[in-house]
Image (cartoon, one colour):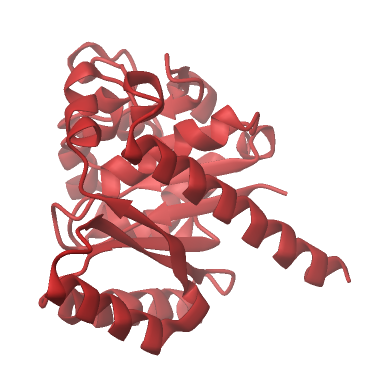
Length: 261
């Protein structure tokens, strides 16, 4: 059974792309078959996976507009997982999608022929609740929300949770909140600790135990087009994402156990 996880937060700079790329690499390191889909016109997940976004023969834009099939868009990344890459062309796709019937289902339908080839499909979203993010949410059965533990983080969270709930009621009854991931975490910061406690109080075990620390090596890795596991596998950032992958796998095993119980 393929698990499709959308990594979303309409706030920018919270570690969405970092999480998508590094979770993909960490799951691939456990011998899972992983597909990463870059749904952000900035193409950062594409570049961070070692693919030149300016030299793409086919991209997610072609897929959403029906010009290419999923097989034609997917390519292997040097990081050990497959990727559907993106670049600025995706902005044009978003505009054209607005006039399509069933526009929010385009990604979901395009993935059907290939989904069974993967254990995990991870989708990186743009930092806004636009049609690209809606497509990513409609195609997913789980959502991971990376967030910094700061004052404004909680404000944006309720809008995103409302959107997920609307999508669950109207078009995708399967979607659920997988978990909240605390990123760029500095335990010496009192506010970070306060917000972290508040998250755990509200969301309980939906908050991942794994915390992603502020880590220079983690911040450097994308400029070399590598996940942290390739760039510096012994760094704190690398250890954290491997721990997150382990936590994701354990949660899924538990869910499957109850489902088949």
